[in-house]
Amino acid sequence: MFTVLPRLRKALRPLAALTAAALLSACDPTMVGGLGGSGASSGGPTIDASAPIPVALLVPKSDSGAGPVAASLENAARLAIQEQSGVQIDLRVYDTAGQSAQAAAQAQKAVDDGAKIILGPLFSEAANAAGAAVADDGVNVLSFSNTTAIAGGNVFILGPTFANTADRLLAHARKRGKKSIVIVYSDDVPGQFGKIAIEQAATSNGIRVVAAEPYSLSIEGVAAAAQRAGATVKSGAADTVFITTDATNAAMPMLLNQLPENGVAPGQIQYVGLTRWDVRPDLFSLAGAQGAWFAIPDTQRQEAFNQRYATTFGAAPHPLAGLAYDGISAVALLAKRGRSDALTGKSLTSSGFTGTGGVFRLLKDGTNERALAVATVQNNQMVILDPAPSNISGAGF
Image (tube, rainbow, N blue to C red; front, side, top):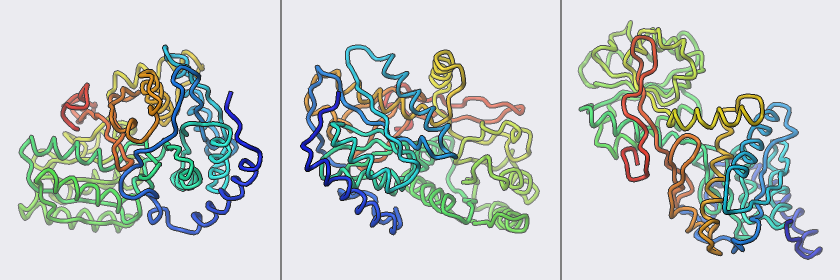
């Protein structure tokens, strides 16, 4: 059971947490991420590795829209605990309701109840608020978000990042002799973040970005961007087109039809996608998808997790469920070493872990790197071009 702190402290902390959350909710989360500075904290609470490790799971159980995701995350965390040996984890679940203020209050309650580390919350604003609430306690937060803007200080993100995916794909492109790209991106926040990630990865991999073409989500907007990108390609300035658009977005099939019509020939120009195209196999028959590259996790490990989850709970896991499993696995691996500093920022960033989608590691800036495979489309089917590396010193890291 969790240790209960003195009553006075426990009574005062929720009020302080709510105040902090109210201040944070008025701010752009990109401006308050990394509360401990540009790097993650090296600190954290001490633990007794021979006793049950108190772990808090913060999920939006009562959020009508996210409740099913919360249930899947909790199931995955409990599955991970069942499958661990040599360590005991005392899991407590706290409901954030998908709200930043409640996430902050629940994070503080979890720490006052004795939690030594927090898994979650799911949403970036809630994770930001939770991290701020418990920063003075030195407790680290392993959020399920993939928003890099909130990473840093005592907040780590477990979700796959645009930066990691872009770097994996452009490292592959460089090995295949690609030298210059045109970026086609949606003129919204995800598109802007994707564009920046591609630009940074291009620089680190010695590839030139010759143009970046935004589009608004309309038939006219997509058509205009396709025409501009096509003009750049036909001029000979680019050998690759990198698309940020989520595969589930209505713009994707339009782009994969209209780019080829504007001179971006799939057989001559390499298409690359920043998101997983395998979630929409119907795209594979479109002209622009033929031979395209995109990144995916280790499919064998992912399928093995999905099968174990389905056997245990009688249904398929939500695609994000594996993040909770990964968080528990990381905590367990560190605790098994028997060190009292197992859950400090220094320990969290000193090792690689094996997760549901392959190996991964947490970085000192609060972000992460995940081993990814490079996939392509051949004969309207997904084919693995370059498998995910099996250790953190392999390709892609």
